[in-house]
Image 1 (tube, helix red, strand yellow):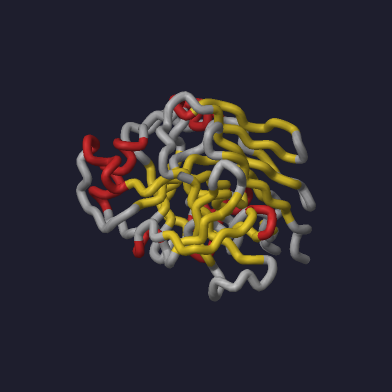
Image 2: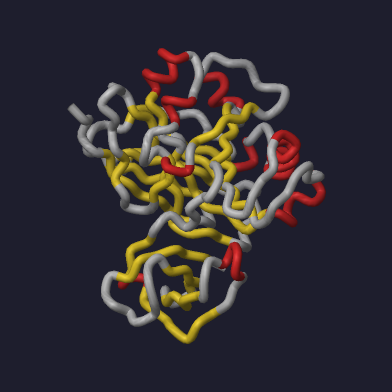
Length: 263
């Protein structure tokens, strides 16, 4: 089931933005009553064409985005790092989240802004100390993330908070897929149509159950929290004005443009 969060381009007559809906095979959206994370999948009588809406980030985390670093061996190698013995985690603020076709804003204090394509997990309920065998019980679904990073500031600071936390630095989308099961699906990033990152999800060092188990052993997870699971090798700069597309087989493609650098 593909769950979208959207804004109607015209007065569709079914209430105040944003809306939630389920996309069918004919690219029609069945509008839902309320946020499905909290109200459940409750259909209304309204439908709208996918082409007649503006897709928003499919989830707007009320609490946090938890990130896993160096979760592909080839990426750890390109960062001159050893393969970690346990997941390395950090946070991005929920204010960094934007949706499909939103502009990634190049901050004034950075001279290099990089792409990082990642699988994103959307958490369905309050949970703590989740056993690996029960991880699927707390997953609402999956979407795609671009863990945008001011690489020069990451190097300068020696840690990741500032470099990862600017507004617009966590594009999510285009929707949440509730039936997705991570396996050998291809994960890619393209800049102006050129492939820059290409791998498969089975190359992750720590799989989804291990990540949920580890993160929930550290902090309580809340409905709508997002965990992004690391990026493969090939990270690199996104030039001013570039169009960046990150995709995962079975989840679709998330595309954003990059602004000119703020002066």
